[in-house]
Image (tube, rainbow, N blue to C red; front, side):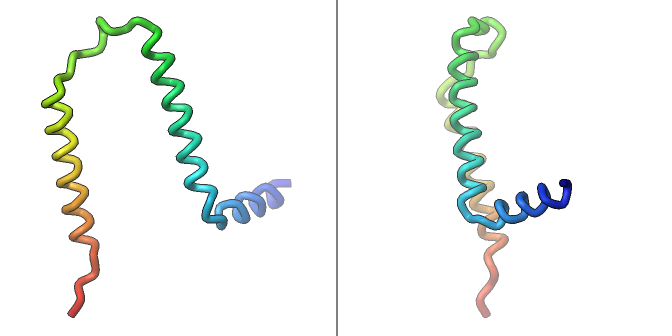
Length: 77
């Protein structure tokens, strides 16, 4: 039984569509979770974050992602 499940897992993980489907389902679940959290009325417990702070944070994340992408690129000689 365990070998059969392992075989099915291996067969599914070899398919290219499995991983994007899993991330898509996680995104849909996160959307529903955010909608549910919005109805709970916990605004008092969550800190207020300004628009400028979010922009700066996203800028830092983008810059670090570019730095990692440049470092991993193979050098042509």
